[in-house]
Image (cartoon, rainbow, N blue to C red; front, side, top):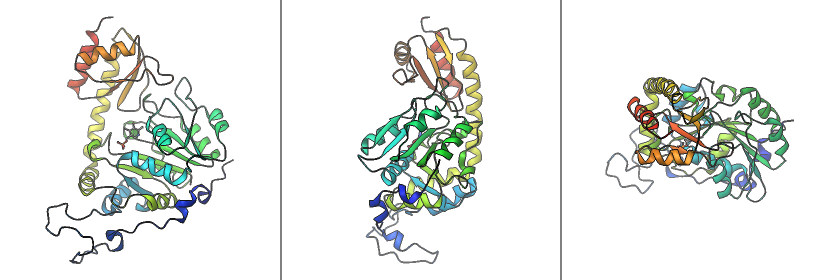
Length: 349
Ligand SMILES: *Cc1c(COP(=O)(O)O)cnc(C)c1O
């Protein structure tokens, strides 16, 4: 049974912590023309001479409207990777606590567990890349703080069955983190609408994939106000820089452009899926809800190197559990996808 109690999950040092108060935290412009002599900045304007808003108010307000949430349910980070790291540092006591990850999946969960000296308990997905709920619940103990579910999953591409996620939300007394980096490509709904129902639900998204802004590094965490305020206590004061805030705001305000691009990528995904069926050495094409396709081939390392020699870089996922001899193709432009198919056709069968 779920005995979720946020107080019991937060590390003692984080509970005791009094956060650093930056100049821009202590005094934020109210719209009046104020004279700022508080932060030892260079006074000559160049667009970035002032510290950025530590709470990214405008960007969060815009995201909150788009997602039908409150700004207090949002935390922004330097990529999802920073958001995920903040979760580890808020809830997991080094050398004592553990997290549950579900390979084959995104590699950063494991790396962050290792960096933070947290035991990583791995429970494999099923052959269909779905959750083995029984084994997951069997691997949990009272020190299991975080459970990472990536949906749609990287590198497999499929979305995770919603009923199984519900079972875990209802039975895991730690925090369930659903990584929705690829949600905008998916026919499945985001879990954001369930935030009020499940106090132990955390959702991460990013501007790196569908939003086309991997270069600016903006990761997003959606959760209860209570969880967000814990993360806010330990985040670096100016973790999202001014240029990133500006660029992200422009993009989120023009979200229809993003949706158009996603639609285009999904059309390309369909035609690439069809064309991949004509390649002899591709033995299996896995179902995808993301902007990439995982395939099983005769010899992944051989095919990877052959494509590389033709100037095409893909991802070899051969060493991932349950992914023997698999390759992952990102959906590119029509021209790039044609180049890929042509190159595949020209390899020896
Ligand atoms: C690409 C990806 C991310 C994005 O990370 P950022 O740090 O926001 O660029 C997060 N999760 C998964 C599963 C990904 O594949």
